[in-house]
Image 1 (tube, rainbow, N blue to C red):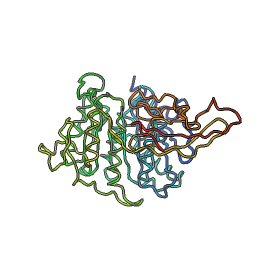
Image 2: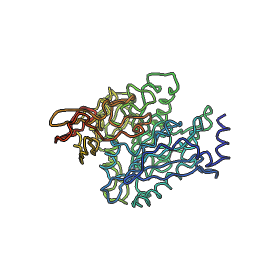
Image 3: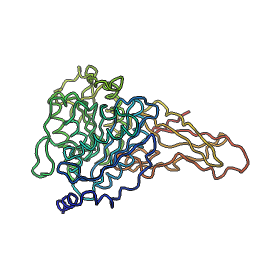
Image 4: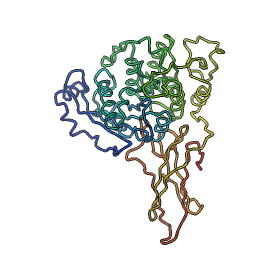
Length: 439
């Protein structure tokens, strides 16, 4: 049935795209830009349609990099990619480093073969690089086509991000592989998944493998039980080459992303701080190793590399002390502490009894909700009840592949109890996911 579906797609080409259920898009108006490519019938090219949406920090003059947030396999995960570039928390990371934030959305039909996009050699590598050129032209940032990449991917997206790292180690500033890694040896049980060669240059790229404990670490049965074995094999091979690679195990989850973003964004922040060139167009800096920490495989305690007593070429690598301390908290209970309040909301506008505003997320802990005050008294919160089935409740909600819910939650509040004709003083306060309030 699956092979027939693939044959059907190849024969019909872009005709299926006209009926594809990927038509519920957040508007891509500046600072957002979008391109869409139809499916190709040419051998070696991408057989699925794909959308690429990018967010450009409004005040950036020249981009220093692009952060790619890659969804996983299956129609639901692919649809979730439509909001990836709109994630306020990931935007905070991108803005700090002068990077664009890209959210791809491959239009993979239900039960079709995921490898036809998550293996970049099947056309998604070329489509991605074409999108960088076209989005660079659309946004007025042609440097988007040549800047370094920071890659995050979930499940099949982890396979894609890892594959791109192996194919283009010179372009990748850092990579995070959540619950999916590229295969380095052929698996007769999965003949559609092709293995990769392991280039020497991959040892220069900081890589974090991230998965849930129920994916084969503590739970040895079930659909995702093989994830740990694949991660262990990939880690062992890369670390054996002297690679700067670590593993972070979520102590609560299976394949869902949980609270991984609170560690991942800190890890990427450290890597981008070290590796991105000061000015756009420069070469990637070597990742410093003199402040590295190490932890034993599947251990929970890390120490400075000089004090590590075990086999260093088999130990999880962490870039510095602050990341190591966050890692130890993450693998314990995911409750990484935060002592800095989030940025205060801006541009609060009152139109009748309706309030609107703008806000940026806290880099460390995102946004949980907003408090609305009238004349010094709290009258509501937005959202009224923050939800997230996979981790800490957050303002934008969270889908399976770590992207905001669709439609996007608006920064808007209606004061239904305000008295007509009376003047009121309103205040909007941001609250991050650790409970800290903005000014």
